Image (cartoon, rainbow, N blue to C red; front, side, top):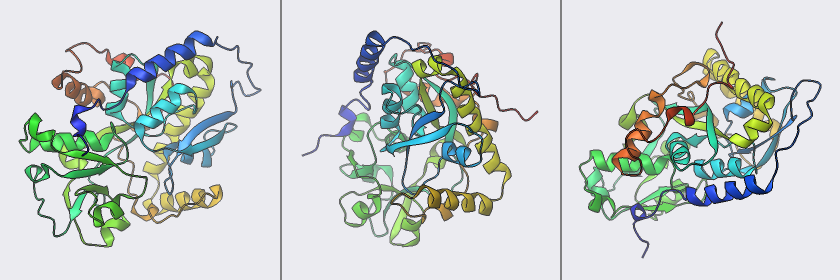
Length: 340
């Protein structure tokens, strides 16, 4: 029988710290020769997701990264894995990653920095956490003893589920009776309909096919909030300051382009990007895109954007009050986007 996931550490940052120490101890910083454009590198490694266009990918297609070219390194299975990829050097930036995981990363002493927002929560008519239409589950208490699907442990699904259970009045002991089940990418709907899990995050076509009922959604729990971030390793930033600035500012411009363009225009651009990259994927999800839900202009941060995640770690006893310096979580200095 699978043990309740609450008894496990959400994400094993200690192993990443050890890995980072080894890398820093064995490798001396390289002296980078600048290109004619004043950049340390014209190649930028990243992770992607099937059928999805990220702000980073949109930035390249709009020409905001030129002459830098993106180098696709493979599929991201979730935020924690994306952060680990950036910290290990397998990619130069994380995939869009849950802000709570980024806070836990900094709290654990891992040498990484949040550089720009990637997505947020908003009044999305499509996304949410669903049960089958005839399911007896109608409240948080009904989830005791049940299974919940997720893409990866330690990511946003886990935090939001725990928040929902707490708001539903469950005790820590009762919460421990709810089990997270890690599902392969794209299999949440099938797992729910086959009753391998009792609750799963769904969106778009999964909902249109019917037979499911929404139990809750992120927006109901936290309102308008930056919940997704891009993380870069401090080492990469130090060795590639100009490239970092170019990429981060390009992402900021892409975020604002999507805000200032019509929804149809943005989706058409997304379809064009998917067609050009020629990967085994389909564009069925694109028509459900509304916006990235980033509340700030240019994806910049303020301290209050991270307060909810810090307060949660303090409440769980993983952080002491005033233990973490917010300035170590994020930096806007690489984001040169300005409306002026």
